[in-house]
Image (cartoon, rainbow, N blue to C red; front, top):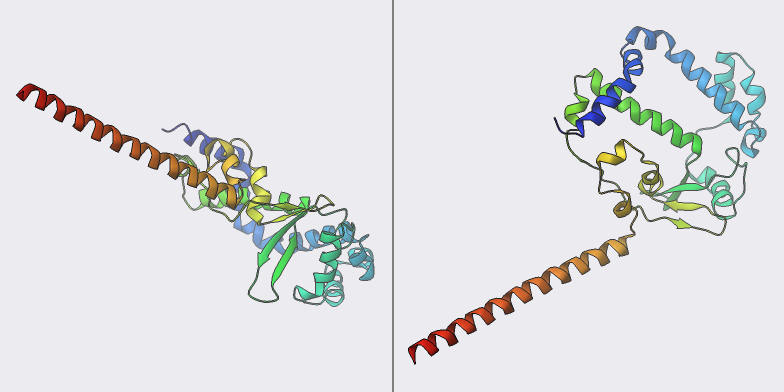
Length: 247
């Protein structure tokens, strides 16, 4: 067994209770709607003091019963595209305003180049990152449920393929870039022990990667040239020795 398989063993043991709950289909059949309503209520209360939440009465809506709360939320927050939020996100990202769409100052934004309306900037709050973290653990849990052996899955290094990890930071300390660049610094042990290409390389800008690749190519070419010169020198020395013997 490769030592990296021990990471899979550890994750399997750590997630044992969660895997058991994920496997309880009767539990999810009974409680999914209730859990979703509870999650919505929690989000409404957290965002109730924001500019967006005050304008739509989130605190009042959060105190209604489940059915009434869901109906009131649907009425207060219309289905919209990115343009409905663009101005608010500009204030948050470019001007450093806090408490607009979510409590506090959002310091990370994932840039996406959509097929419509040009670049979009998605606020990435600490709460969102925590939620994504738990969802990632559930992926391992579901893999186990469907018969995937985590020790076998992690029997070797794991190559993470993502977008650019180069981030730009403005005068407000707000970082913008590909989501890969935002989450790479969050990779911790034990995943960091099997993660490739590694944090140092992953956080290099595209220019730095190209520069490193060019230096490696130049070094290889120099070694090849040196080898060719050395081979010619040896061949020349051999020819001189043979002529000396003939004379």
